[in-house]
Image (spheres, rainbow, N blue to C red):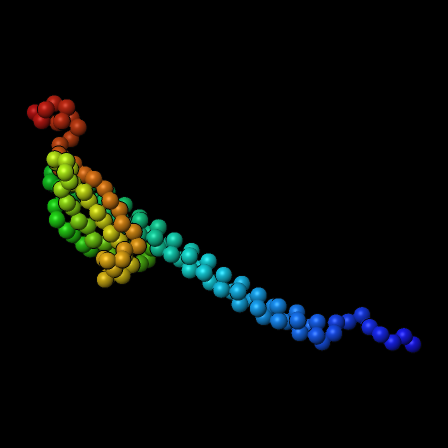
Length: 139
C-alpha cells in the first residue's frame, strides 16, 4: 500500500480558494451595482434631454403662432417615460439686438432647479416674421 498524497485537495488549499472567492465576489458585485447605477443615470439624463428638446420645440411653435417670444421665466411639469419631469425655462436678451438666450433646465425632482439632470441652451430671434415676409420687406 502506498502512503502519501491522494488525488484530492488538502484543507489548506480549499480554505485558500474560499478566501480568494470571498474577496473577489464582493468586488465583482460592487462593480455590477455601479454599472447598473450608471445605466440608470444615463437613462434619466437622456430622458431629461428629450424633455428639454420637446419644450424648446414647443416654445418655438408657440412663439411663431403668438408672434411674440417668451421673455422672463416659466416652469412646469412634463411626462415622459412614465415619469414626471420638472422643467424651468428662462429667457434673457443677449448683447445682440433681437436675440434671446433661452435656457431650459430639467430635473426629476420638484426642487431640483439648482441641480438639474440636463440643461439645454438655445438662442432665438425675436423677429418672428416668416421667411416670405422677411424677403418681401414685411409687406
